[in-house]
Amino acid sequence: MTILGFYYIVPLVSVICGLWVFVSKRKHLLNTLLSLEYIMLSIFWFMSLHLTGLGHESYFLLFFLTLAACEGALGLALLVSVVRTHGNDCFSSFSVLQC
Image (cartoon, rainbow, N blue to C red):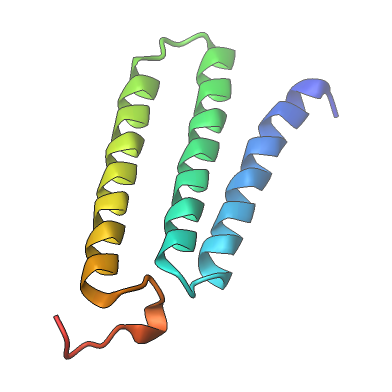
């Protein structure tokens, strides 16, 4: 396997690790938001390697990075709202009946 193959394997392993943390560590909202950001950055890393390897322009990468930043800002706003209403970000303290 060449060194170029390792450049593609590392971001894919990062995505898999981020998905594993997202699925297994669901006690706090902050943990899930951080794992989502890690997944988005790993996908950005993989796409940037792939598009530069093909010789394409990187305008789509800027669009993707902008959407990832907006997703992070919305997640932080949701986290602040949840902490203000419920007092913490622990999922076990949430109730379906309470809004």
